[in-house]
Length: 468
Image (cartoon, rainbow, N blue to C red):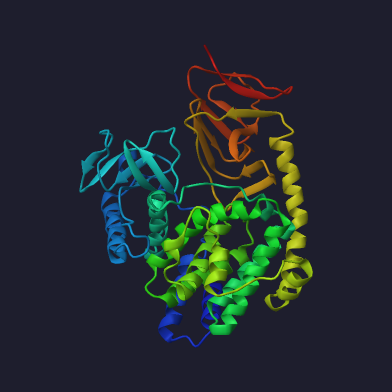
């Protein structure tokens, strides 16, 4: 469908430099592939086939071949290991899956050149890496993007997650609650504005923009305890994964820069929640600027690496001590006044959302779901609300499972953390704790036999307990 905004976006990218007609065409194509489609992801047709046929095997096989070809073309140059390996696509509604190889426990069967089966109901479909049926898999939810570049970017992002532990980069998660605050958002956005400018500059102008981006980053991190450590965790996890997907799905450094630029612009335009999603935006920009200056930077990565410090070393930048007055001064050429004004307006709405979430999920009454050895959950990284440092609401359509059963919610859930570890999940208390399936405000819980609903520690609260 024609949308002038797409093409104004593409022409604005091209206007940064003297861009050829071919590059402009690429920019238009990328604008169409990167900007989000309104509404929810496409669902299967109402006349969808039986679960084991929910995914077209022929199309799945073609997507496997595309990913294998991209990995073969990379020839281990990016990370020293082949990215393509065991992979399956899973339909989130039916749990039907199509894999590119057999498993180790005989759960899949060969069909039309691929392997088909069903993911257990207690395992949440997600875009991630997972160990299942004796194999370390790349798992990607079906349907995949129609656009080939977007599809490859997604698949290769998830392929990185499967191999990252072999690179010494563990799959870790961290909640960056400070990125839901006024200062956290303002100075992250200023960092992105400066990175976006740096992508299209050269020599000293690029170095100046990089220095400004790193100054905004340093100032933001100076305002919040543990901000640097928590941001680094997510940038080394999702940031590097998205960098991998973008780099290997583009044909040149110019095209790589365009995609990195568009991801920055999209995030700045959408102004969505950054708590869990920011690294998807920052990663490609940092990766591009590092590639342009220090192509071997990946070989020095450790679990303690900081992409900002690596970029400062690559561009020989030594930052002065961070301070608000200097940050505000540096922000002026990047529309700093406008960013601060917009985020100040948003802060009022945000405080209302946090207050409502606190009433619903903390002040109670609530059902507390314990965390045991089989805890698994799926969520939208763009719909995460930080209530405080230890309480985070995952909004919208979510699924949580553990030894007690499977929770499906269209109204989100609250996750509690203690000392960085997940301690429990809250949903609003059910009206009838004896109903089966157990139901509450927007959620249902398929409770396994051997578990019971019992009173919680506060009056009106409930929790789950294993029966003798």
